[in-house]
Amino acid sequence: MTFSAHATGPLISVIIPTYGREAILCDTLKSLLEQTYSAYEVIVVDQTQNHERETQQFLTQLASENKIALYTVPWANLPAARNYAIERANGSILLFLDDDVELPAGFLAAHAAGFENRPEVGAIAGRVFDRMKLSESTSPPIEQLPPEAMDPGIAWYHIDLVHTTRPQQVLTARGCNMSFRRSVFVEHGLRFDERFEGSAVREESDFCLRFRKTGLMIWYEPAAHLVHLGEETGGCHDVGTRSLTYQNTFYYNHFLMALKNLTPLQLLRFSDRLFDCHILGHPPCNKSGSPIKIISRFGFYSFGFLKASFTLLKPTERNGRRFSQPFDRSSGQKQQSSRTASICASR
Image 1 (cartoon, rainbow, N blue to C red):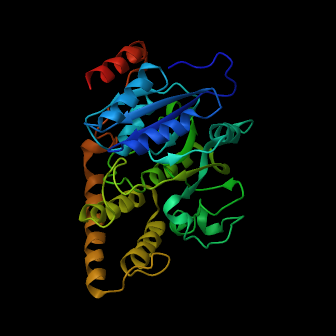
Image 2: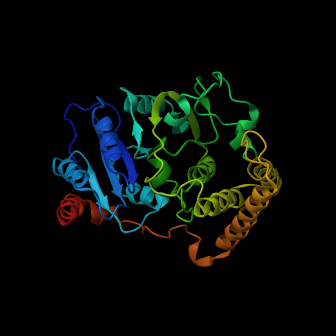
Image 3: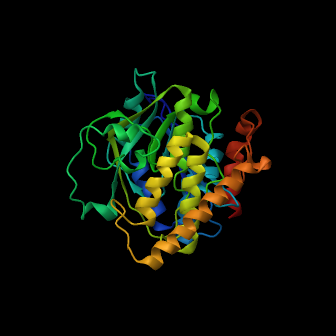
């Protein structure tokens, strides 16, 4: 990758895992490359084995022009793609985006500004406007999140990173718009847990809960906002929310996060709230109260708990690396440019 000789500000490594995206991925990259903040690199971890011709030509051209670093991997797992990029990134700030977002002018600068002269801040949680919900949203603006939003047992039903307008400390970030200091990964050795499956829901929550042990703060910065397009297919999972696969992984991922990070009392409250909202369908979930659907959802809930418990008992997976492997930067950096060119040429 090449950077402007007149670049100012910390170098930001923008990491975009992608799977099954075509035109929307190209639009995301175009939106990113229009940013005026000059000190950044773009790392695309592509889990798509066969792109449409136009998409492949676009990606190959960007890589050949050193506008992106393009890596193709043989698996599809969002946390693994993040880990793969972390170990190849050069920036002092690592920014994670989804492959279906629109960025406003000044987006990168807002993330960089969130860390400036604030050593206690180790992560920036950006604001996320969901395209599918913008037209139907009637919720009023929020200045201060309630105390419950910092309680790991029930926070997930009180954190609102869409309508909150005031900068403040938060418990977690949304995976499509979050950045971290490099020290989080180098000095503290944190990585994303590749045992999260499917849509990988709660993988960023799990990471943020473990991040808290560093003593650093996650700071919500509404100025660092974007629009999440929320495409129905593709991404790093390509699993419809109504599918059996999604239902299986949804509860499994929730319990994997909870069993890893919560105290027994927090776990009890978490399980109760998950049951009340997602099984019984009470607000804010507002699901059908049909007895058949409740029984069906309870089956997935129970299976998810058992599967997550079994996963944590496996001694071979305790490092959480199912797909990616630790990368030796000292030997890999010399080959990075030629490897990227070889990947592009072979596709």
